[in-house]
Length: 399
Ligand code: SF4
Image 1: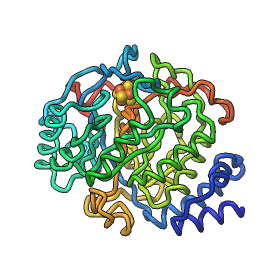
Image 2: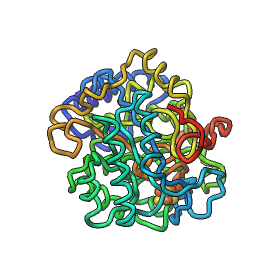
Image 3: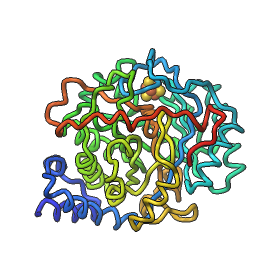
Image 4: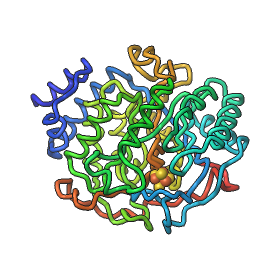
């Protein structure tokens, strides 16, 4: 297909595809899907080989958020039955992180619900970063604490954070349909602050909230312009009790097309499959490793993932290898560009997604925009389990 040959050539040159080309990827038929995966896979392997970076989420503070993000199980007044707890102590967070690192993760993502941290919260997280770094040599730490005020990104950088996650989530034009308590511009501002402070920026999206193909292309093109080192791609987990609980819009094929489009638009960036991997890709997860070079290990913020051992087996069976702590994630031109992590790439959260973080997400939205999206799929509520283990509980974490 000419389209795919063009996109591979552009991806290898880091050249931005046209919007029409990106839209055409999302519009490909199921008959062409394996060709799409193979083409985007060439770009993935060119920049990242067959390595898969593992990231581990530690939910430092769960629920009780005053914001109203419609996709999020932690939002104001939600009735989702999730774990609710206030800040973990540094030693509790460090213990949770250690489980993920022992399971093969090289990055720990420290996430807290809320609009954004107070300066006291930043000090608290600084203590946690210190504890984790002291006990785990070489670990990468990403913070995901919501909107940042002036000076907070610098403080986190000084404390040893490598990266900061904050997701754009969806297009600027539909953002107001998802959240009313903060704006798209607020989110862009926080990613910019993180970048400016020398932190490796991580910013991504949530698919499946009823958005159109144009919305998806808009947000991915906006991300390319912001130039984060990593882009987490969340697939909405429609958690019961959130406004988006009925938004079951994704099929495994649709998820693969979305990941391929993101890879073509952001060819040399760490593309991470974040929340919703097990729920929406299901048995197609191994195929998605040809597109993304990074995943979360184990559980998510408020919902459970598959067993960490199953993640490792899937990677090996699909012919990929877990990226070691001594391996550099990003291609050389990016790793040496001074984005904070230096050698480390990036990981993703930033919406408090129930997938990653960064948008603290987990739900989905955009009522009116749904029309052009793929065929609605069966609601797989049987695959959604509220997290009852790990951080904030007495039970061992999944890693
Ligand atoms: S995404 Fe983050 S800011 Fe929004 S409701 Fe959830 S925890 Fe709060």
